[in-house]
Length: 257
Image (cartoon, rainbow, N blue to C red):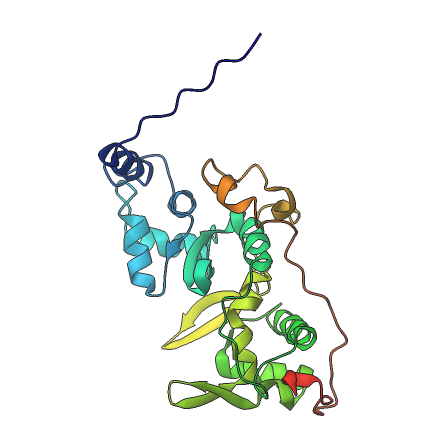
């Protein structure tokens, strides 16, 4: 018996827009979802400006306020603030973080290529990323504090102020910030006054199973899987390498030299 060909779906712009607005809880705020659920529906809430993300998520939940989003992020830790799609800051569901790190770490790097003498080789990038994860394993550190911790563990070569940024020179390691987040060893901690802090997402966030990104787990919602299955090939891993504690510059291969 020959199967009948499927009838193509008939779509209109207005129908697609209406479905998307309903799915994103814009036509009517959701009464049965929390901040992490909403962030999952959106495939991450853009959070370059955190107050905008709080409004974006809170607006979609009946009776919610920015305080509810802050509580989910910093107290309940069902949300995580990290570098998401396009290398920009997003709020992601903590339970989906293994899936996101697996997918994002499988993509080509979104970090601009730095000139010779500034950029890291792949091998030494792995070493510095492992050092970042180690430094943040039990701490919330500002940029300056993390720079000192990296220098102590890997040596001054990793923190040389060689990276052009906003009319200044940043420590070399900062070119790896979003890459470290995509490897699953760095996320944002609570601000300390006017200063940003970073920490390790293994410190208490309610994540999915460690193997989740390998097979796209049950936490993947309809609409996520089709987009991510092509890139989520393996778990985010960081090769643990011996850490330099002698303070010396590495050989000529370091930093692309």
